[in-house]
Length: 287
Image (cartoon, rainbow, N blue to C red):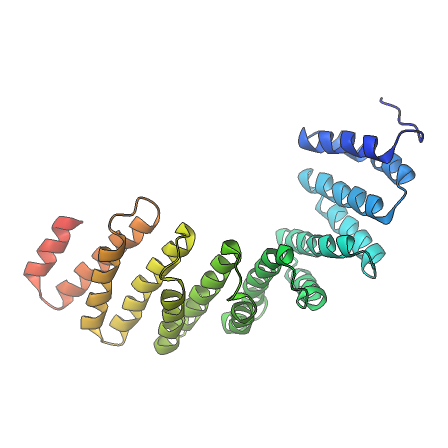
């Protein structure tokens, strides 16, 4: 077994430790933890060591130990004045919540998301936006299961309010997804007018986006809006929107093209109901 000596610098040990993590030698990496902690001279060294330990344990699927590890990190550094540690500590909360979710411990998962948001929502740094946006999404899903889907509406609304002006496309994708999820929940309860409002938000705010994931959400919003309009017996308007989807996205080469096919399929069903056979035949030929 490799022997480590206290005369070795923390940096040398940590580089070796990271190499083992990179090479998926997780047990070997864990064996280095005592030596790393012995050689750590600063809080940031201890923090990175313990976060690395949690990473190794996660990859070994030792979920109970992972949660214990993150609890140790949070307890040790929750009152830190070191801004670098404080920022990265958010990931300890987030990763801990994910493990609770993996273990189906939904109450604990939800509590951890709430702790994270309470501690960090006033942090305006761009590097934390994405973890906060993901936290809101996961919290909403968790709330839907612990309570009911309608309870998640406030969570999605809060996400949208806090991040709709972000300049990060990944964050904006979560904003668009939140609005779509709100619309879906309203649809479950047949609150079609409210669902349409949420779809309209996505369509109007992101219609000029060049991000392919957001474009797909806009296309989905159009298709789903048309379905809600059909449920409100606004068939002509629904047909117009299906045509709009085809017109906008028929030349796409990614997942958005699926929405074109769905729009044509839904349009064919509606034309059949309306007994517009000539137009129905045309749509079927396109499909």
